Image 1 (cartoon, chains in turn blue, yellow):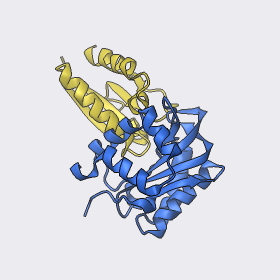
Image 2: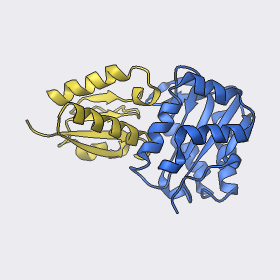
Image 3: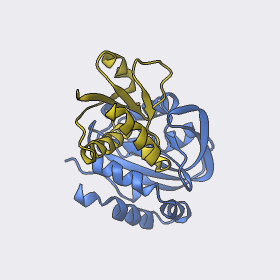
Image 4: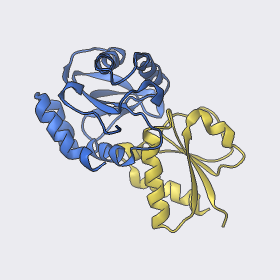
Length: 157
Length: 94
């Protein structure tokens, strides 16, 4: 079984955390509770973000794509977190800069060097300002889920 | 012309390097260039110092390498992608 696990329970549309560590802990803990990732995922994701930041200043709302080594993952999933207030994340490839992130795509990947089409679609998704605006403003988990499913087209992976 | 070895690296060697890898593959094909793409973690770059011609990475590198390093964040954000592609092509055609 290697499909992407994706349903309303991995979409957190109203995160109030004030720091990136809190955001990552809240999102990761949710995946641990659902047994999608191992307990070790939480610490690994925070450490990785410290070492290699994943904040991306995009055209609209900044995005972060935290991820870590595959051994912490039980089942492949993408968790989406919408932050009530922007939280500063380090900019990918540029440690001295931060960017105010509103949307977090937490990637729990269980194979290296794969999922190319999924990741490419994801990157396309956050290169579109309208798409990001929709995600930031939409409150319904169901709508967000359907919207992302349509954009990423999980069925064709 | 010798096939160029291009390292594509990110922090985990899982996510962003996959995307960058795909982009360079497409680019090479479009331009009829043969490239030896190696997708790795940034921590593994040292092992390729003798063979690599170019490093394209989304992670930060403080270290100095004997080959050019190109930042590939634009492939992820969509901002400045054309410039990055141009830089990479120039290196591949050298």
